[in-house]
Length: 573
Image 1 (tube, rainbow, N blue to C red):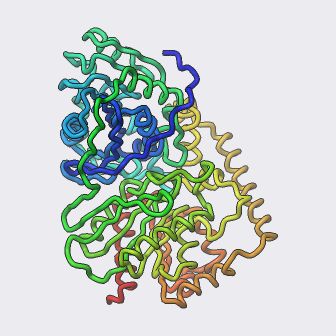
Image 2: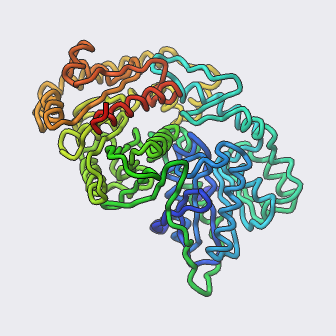
């Protein structure tokens, strides 16, 4: 397939959050007879593709087709029923099809699947009833998918010292998302080329090495269009560097919506409030401020007087967090009587774009987002609020914490810096703070680099030049900092003192060797004892984990620190 320059696409249509049988999703009713279901990738790849995938759904909805995207069980904001099983994932697609046909009134259904989601979409379509099927870089075999994940895991999971954590026998994880032995066994049995019936009359396949699958579907009687998918690595490689493959998405929109006929009557809404319930917790999708989105978790039982936790994910990860950390922590806290709000800053996840498409990383504008979130919580009776953030999210949380008296505490993980200057290079800092920046971030932008990394062809001299440039940039930043005006609120210690005087509590957590530790020593204390006196609590240094604290042991330690902070803020011994 030849990719023509993508035409200007219609303005995306605002979707509404819905919950269907424990699945959290976003739905646009549309005006056409056709409905389109987006079957996203899974785990780390979907976390990376979240924002572009949301945009694709909006573009399809803008054509008038009813559109539904959703989180699989055990992922994003869905419940954990059947989490991490092939049957549960296929059942989710079946439920989505039922919703479009029976509740939204669609007479035609299109499945659009990305990566393993494309594999799942193809398997679900083999059961019949699908009119069109679009597969973006589908995994033809489950064994092939598992091999890819094993190859990518060392770069994604790399620890701060350059080593890779040891996985239990039979287990594999990528970016904190696990693939257990039972799921791996189910996936290993998949081979789409063994299909005995066409999954749909019309099929679009984009990606490398898809000829065999395209020929198989054509032999079964399907009309198959195939082509390349340039930009795949940038789409699913890392949330920080995710980019939209414009040409491929234009092909998908055209294929999914071609020939869709208008409905004779208005499409009914999907009557499903965006509320979820689990073991001891209740959740509701909420909007507040100028287009901000979050998930408000509450205890299912009576209130305990605990503070409310406000989670802000690291970097450009959606509100569920790296490895789904925020979702898991929020539900565990709610079951123990602690409410929370996990939010997307503007330009991240499911919140609205920032003006001009600006990046939210280390931006002073995020203060407005925090203010709107605190206003929302205050209007709903929340008293004391504890902020939880990591990396750039920790920076934004610190700036809000010392300014707003409604903040009673903050847990900041891997805080890179206490202050940011507009002249600083965000991209350079991001690549330094991400543990795999010298490898993974680079390979995302250049497919040839990816192949060289996976085959062990790594240029040592090139790495040395990267490290030298990094050192020179660091020296240049420190020199410029000497001539900058003092930040609002005075020195870092003065602002920490401002928080402590009003009774707020601050906890800092770092992974061993994290690039943010020099700023801690420079501004707070060069010895652990001095830093502890000034902060009012010791700084926790977590060994054997990555920048995102993805390992189970690191998550357990972080959870314990947060529980202790909650107890202190609540006045419990």
